[in-house]
Amino acid sequence: MLLFSLWGSLALFCAYFPSLSIAPQSSQQPYPSYDYGADPPRLPRRQNSGYFPITGVHTGSGVNGSPPLRIEIRDLQKDPIAWNLYILGLDMLQYTPQSDMLSWYQIAGIHGRPFIPFDNVQPKPGNEQAGYCHHVSILFPTWHRPYLALYEQAIHEKVQQIAQQYPVGPVRDQYMAAAANFRIPYWDWAASPPGGRSILPDSVMSPSIVVNGPAGVQTIANPLYSYRFQPLDADQLPDYPFNQYVETVRYPATNNPAATSQNNLIAQQLDNSGASFRNRLYILLTMYKDYTTFSNEAWISSDNPAGYDSLESIHDQIHGLTGSGGHMTYIHYSAFDPLFWLHHAMIDRIFAMWQVLNPESYVVPEPAIFSTFTFSAGQTQDVNSPLTPFHNASGGFWTSETSRTTEVFGYAYPETAKYGGGNLTSQVVVAVNQLYGASGVPRLTMKRSSNLKSADAEWVANIRVKKYALNAPFFVHIFIGKFNTDPFSWSFEPNLVGTHSIFVKAIGPNSTCNCDTGQLVTATIPLTDRLHVDVLGGFLKSLSPEDVTPYLAKALSYRVSLTNDTEVPNVAVPSLKVSIFSIDVERGAGDDELPIWGEMRGHMDVSMSS
Figure 1 (spheres, one colour):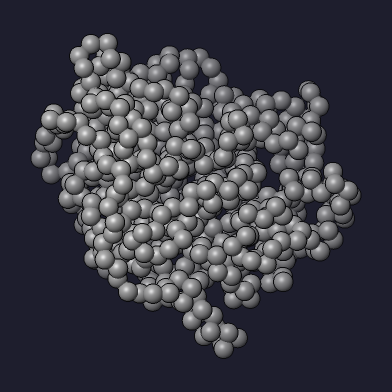
Figure 2 (cartoon, helix red, strand yellow):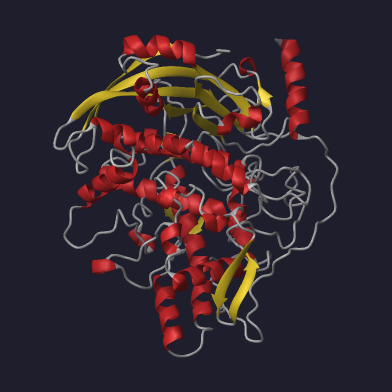
C-alpha cells in the first residue's frame, strides 16, 4: 500500500501538472467591449464613508406589491430591453479596472484568490491564505446571500447609467423602467429545459453576442461566455494553470494561454445527468427538514443515512461538471467565471424555497470546520456571526439573522413572491412538484392516477469521503450496467446514474488547504429513475428489496476520476464509502401535496468494488 501511495501521488502530480513553465501573456481578444462613442456612461462618485454599504437594490416594483423578481436566464432573454441592459451591465462590470473595489475582479476575488482585503476588512492573523467564503459550514447558504446582493448592486448601478444613455423619449423611458426593475437572473439546471434544449443555456456558449446598446447594434465579447482578466496577474493568481489562463475557461483542452472552453462537452455531461439533478433537488426540498443537515455537506457523526445530501453538496455537483478542470472547479477561482453567479442565484433560490417550506428551522451554533479569511476553524458560528466582508448601511456586518429574507435585499423569486393574499407555502409546494417532481419526472407520472396517492420506494446511493482525499477536485461516477473503460467517457455514458463532484480549495500535492484534511463530506445519488427503466425493460422484476439488492450487487459499480479525466483507482481513495439505501415514500395525489417519507433502510455497502 505504501508503494502504491508513493506511485499514486506521483501519478496524480503528473496528471495535474504536466508542465510548470510560465507561458507569456496571450493572444488578442477577437471581440471587443461595447463602444459607447464619445459619451460613455459616467458612474456617480461614491461618498468616502470608510466602508461600502451593501443594501441590495430597492428600485422598481413587482406584482401586487412584491419586490422585483430574479427570473430564470432564459426567461430574461425573452425581454429584449432587460436582456440588452443585462449584457451591457455585465460587459461594463467586467471591463471596470481591476484596481476598482467594485470591479468584477475584486468582487469575484472575495470568494478566494487573490486573498486581498475587500472593503478594508482585514484577515485574522494566520488566515491570510484563504478567501472570505464559508464552505462545509452552517453559514454556507447565508454568507452567499449578501455576496449576491453586492454583485447585483454593482451591476444595477451600471444598468441604470446605461439606460440613461439611450435617446431621450419613449425608448429611454422603456429602458429606465426596465433598469429600475432589473435583478440578476438565475440558471435552473434542474428543471427539464424547454423545447428539448440543453440544460446549459445557449447564451453562455458563444464567445460573441449581438447587443443593441445606446450607440446602436454591435457584436461584442460575450460576458456570459468568459471573464477576461484586465490583465492576468500571475502573482495574484499563482496556481498553475490559472497563472496561464487570460480568461476563464470551462473544460479546457490545454493548460496554456490559448485554452478555450469546451462548452459543447459541458452541455453534454449536464444533459446526461439532468435526471440526477432533478431527483436530488426534489428529495432535498421535500425530505430534508433540518437546516443544519440541509445547509452543508459536513458529515454528522451520528451517521443519519437520511441526511447525506445537502444544498452545498448538490451545489458542488454543478461546480464540478461545469468546470471540469476550469475555473468553476476550484473554490479559489470559481467566482471569476460568469456562470458562478447564475449558479449561485439558483442556490439562493433553492434556499429561499426551502425556507418557505421550513420556516422554523435555521442557523444554530456550530464550530467552524475550515478557516476563512476572517474566521478560524473551531470558532463558533451562529445566527449573529458577521458575514464578512459585507457591511450593512450602519457600518456593521450582515449576519444570518439580518439576511434571513430575500426581501431585505429588494428581490424575490417567482416561487417565493407574495402575490397578494395567496398561500405562499402552497405556492412553493406546487412549484416544487411541477418543476422537479411528479410533473417533471416521467416515471412518477406513469405511476400516478388522478386523485390517488401512490406508495413506492426511492433508492439512493449514499457517498461519504474525505474532502481532501486527493488534495484536488475529483468525481465519483455511479453506474448501473456496463460502461466504457476510458475515463473521458464516464460523464457521457448512457449507463451513468449520476456523478458527484468534490469541490476543494487546494489544487495540487504541494499545496495546502490550511484545514483538517480528514474532514468527511457526504452526498446522495438517486437510483430510482434508472431502476424503473430496468423494470420496464424486463431486466429487474420489481423495486422491492429482494429484487433490487441482488440486481445492484451485480450491476452497480463506481469509478473515481480527476477533473482532467485521469482515472484514480478505487483503492486509492480508502475513505470513500458508497452504500445503498431505500426509503418508503407515499406520493401525494396532486401537485399541491408533498410526498410523505418513511424510514431509510440500509441494504449493502459497495465500497471498493471493482
